[in-house]
Length: 94
Image (cartoon, rainbow, N blue to C red; front, side, top):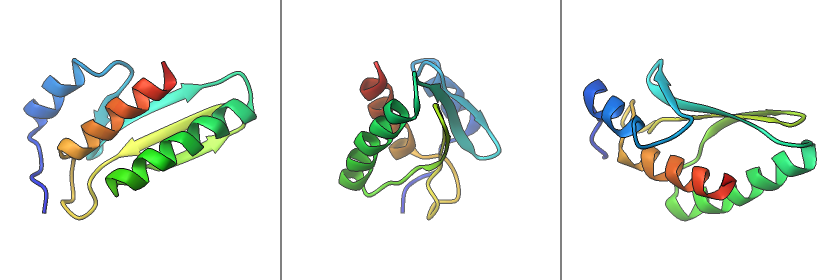
């Protein structure tokens, strides 16, 4: 089982992670793309990375907007793997 990060640790890690916030026990971002095809393409790329990590996001997609929430379900909170996947997501989007 992974170790849950304290709110202080989470806030410190968020400073190095552009576009992400913390609330309700998860870290969140919202990404806007040119169209649905671009949003879905990024979702597919994220899905492959999530499979490698065996860590899957909670997300919703409406047309060109992708909203992502990350928390570690078996730890019941935010852990380092959430930040690892968030960093990968940011790299894919850049």
